[in-house]
Amino acid sequence: MSVVCLESLTFGLGHLVRAADALGERLVLLTRDPAYYAHELERLQPDALEVVEIDTFDVEQVADLLRRTPGLRGLISATDTWTLVGAELSERLGLPGLDPAVLRLTRDKAAVRNRLHETGLTRGRAMDVTGRGAEEVLIKEVGLPAVLKDTAGTGSQNVWLVRDEPELVAVLDEAAGRELKGRLFAEPYFSGPVYSAETLTWAGRSRLLGVSSRLMSPEPYFREEITAFPVAFPEARRAMLERWLGDVLAAIGYTDRFAHVEFVLTTSGPEIVEINPRIGGALVGEGMCRALGVNVYEAMIETALGRRPRLMDADLPGGPAVAFVLGYPAACGVFTGVAGLDRLEDMPGSPAWYPVRSVGDAIEHLADSRGYAGIVYAEAETAELATHHAVAAANAVRVLTEPLPPAGGPDREASGG
Image 1 (tube, rainbow, N blue to C red):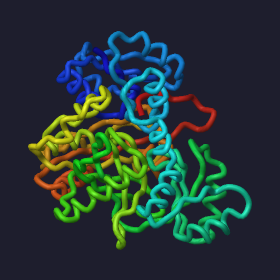
Image 2 (cartoon, rainbow, N blue to C red):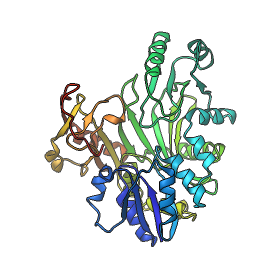
Image 3 (tube, helix red, strand yellow):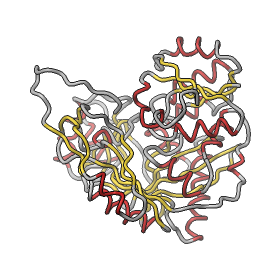
Image 4 (cartoon, rainbow, N blue to C red):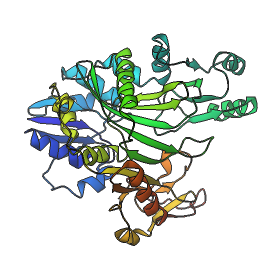
């Protein structure tokens, strides 16, 4: 029997293969570029899964392949980019899955914000930013400071903080020259620490598996830099967060699968940033497996098969807390390697480097997550101590670049990324 994965996050494929094996399923990965998963595939036996290279944006071509896949029982689409493609394919082929209308809603950040506002779960409304006079209406309806962003954006791309009217004029001018995946919209800027809740939902009930911290770059950017899991909230606050998250997910009709829910803790309580219908990216999934003491990817396979995931009720044995630091270069350019990795062996927390970029890749953006070349990971007894270990290890590592060739010069080959 087969479970097909329509692309995947950069890390976690090994856990997914082991989860499929444990459940007696054969995993098939459909991808446009197998090199994207080089780090994971190099650590698996060649026959651990079937890798099929195909244009995963071509719905007709993928649907035809799926119809010819022997014993197909489920489809996993666990990335923002392919969420809607996966929803359409599951609906066409009658495979288990979340209501496509709910998935379409989650991919429209403005619509999610307004749905939650209607149900009293956020203080702020979203406003599409279009046409003449948008500045005046935005200031009146949303207020300043505000955040302008892409309704279907990913990786903190095309997100702008606007603190005053001159910044608003400049951001609107910059946004007009950007290619957005959705529409430009504005929402209130909620001040406070940012977190991500890692949840699992089945039949409309949600379990909070833990909360990740999200340490960000200084304003006005929203570059993700350090994550740790699990944050040690007092039990009363953790219970409050679990109830609130259950209400938030129920309000958008979320009935089953993992969710990665970003929120801000403000002086008036939690406020949603966005809801992602998937497990967390970067090394969040890896960290969950280690910190919870279970392979959480078994739940991903089970929900794809239409089964109640055992993780909904399981006692979690636990493990070390984890943290990771995204490794950005000091300057844009062509990635040439990483210095200092030899020092990690003598540092506490069993630090390790997880590569994302390949030598020769062009790194052209440093204000968002497109700029990091890899991740420094470490462990400890608590998330706070794990953060100290990860930051110390990351400080010993330098991501190296050399200047990009001049426009019109010879192209450099890039892969992975």
